[in-house]
Length: 474
Image (cartoon, rainbow, N blue to C red):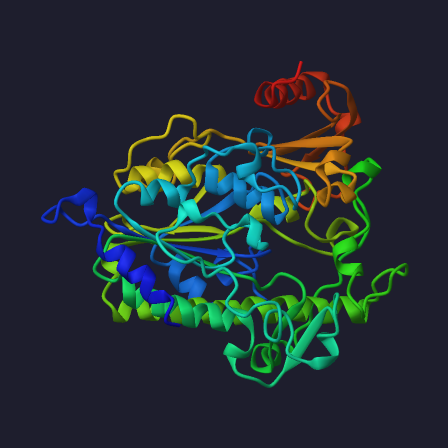
């Protein structure tokens, strides 16, 4: 990978704010996993086999109630990396790049680059297309696609490489590096070796467990006899139709029936594929962290592990993401910071939006006042500290507007508080409400019953006022 040398040369010219004798700035290793719900042992998932992510959690702070701002790749990643909500970036779908609407935005890695860091990307950090990669954020070449779109990017079997979507799962006896996440780990290790000795912000993006669920056979085998649950695939009682989609993402795969419901046998295969893919990516993360230790970099490196959004495995009658339900918007989020007591768990409600100001503060970078999140540094010091007490997520309808944002008809805003999830669906760019939802997490943590019509007016009015103040509605 000779082109990586350009990155090393770019970094060689940089030091900490140009002061060669300054105390070393902490490095940042930022690990993003695509479509990972909290299916990890450290989050209490007894089915999961995630020893490396679990070990990382034991060295840092695990946020048990962290939420993305929109449960689909591009809007979520854009929000996290700009520190701005989707309504500010105007990225609500998959086609629009944020520089089209915010050409002067300063991304999180760009902020580090502007303050003396070498910044590097391996794998998927921004959304996948070449047009969405942001050269202004990085010190050297962007390694967002280490396989191209051919063999190993999603599949290795010829039967699945005929164009379009192949099967929803693939299980073959093969090396980890046959698939893309193994190649991402390998490339990340090489970059780590090149930037060691310089203050760096290295962002690594793993693509599994995003569909298709493809991983080497050895990650499938431990689950061959697992009794995966068969969720009640019903939509919540009294929930409005606009809250749902038809699981179009899953139904596009060649082995998934287009109209019939998912059978129990197929559902269990999908569950196994998801958990196998999680284990596969966990192993790749372990390789990167082992190299960090071999290079003796961990003692001065802040490690962040996060997902862009969650994932439905049949719950609420949904597969994949693209909703405002807990399964889609809740994410794993771990920050391991040198010098802070560990392990720790915080049950505070936090948002991915909060990452930008947190890393800026931890690394002594200037505060950017336009950033809309709140620093988590107080929670890192004291996981029981009071925090803002809410998370705000949103999603668009119809589903087809993901591919063409000019077709957006409705926007749903969802407020998560300590006890409730309250959602209002608005005609796009108006104050006209078309549907409401309310779920009581104390009595209904699986969000099976919309009780909005049953709740006392005082509670509803309070939640409505809080939500509308956040989104600027009357």
